[in-house]
Image 1 (cartoon, rainbow, N blue to C red):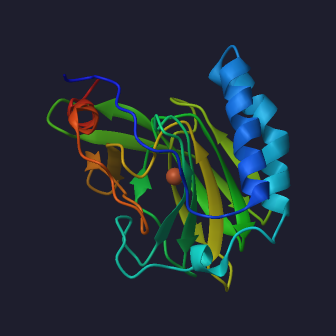
Image 2: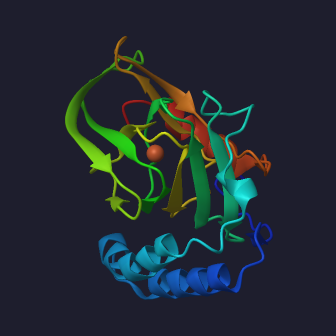
Length: 225
Ligand SMILES: [Fe+2]
């Protein structure tokens, strides 16, 4: 049935007590918070501690990937996702000088630098038409160092691109309120004023197909919403 809620297995891709404790804490906060904004506020402390611990993330999840839904050898490593796909943690590895496409997330989240440095360009839509044309305005450029993090709370701060500015690959951790690699969202081409449906995938995990994915794609295709 289109829109039916599907349940899969909860998946950990790293055996780490620290990661399990972090996920427990985040799930408790999400379950008890009145709003996504309140949840994000309470998640900042645990997320800061996760970013500060350099021992728990294996080398494998800090590497670029030859085949990438993001392009440019960008690694998108899934570390954890909830059974109902309402929460995911992943690492994004961007080699020096490489830049992600301009994209949105359509979900609340926390994104922080675990290694290296990045420049983030934040955009907002100024005009969208039904024939897939979309104009963006650059609203902020931020320099991020290891340990820095920011919130995603659509529609605020939800459209961006990131570029590695360090001489080593940047590794950022992405805690999102969706199975972010597998949902359909948007990729923008600001130079052409166009937008198209986009799914980044994960380097190390498949995306299940099903009615809920198709629904997400249809939602992504239907613009303006
Ligand atoms: Fe992003």
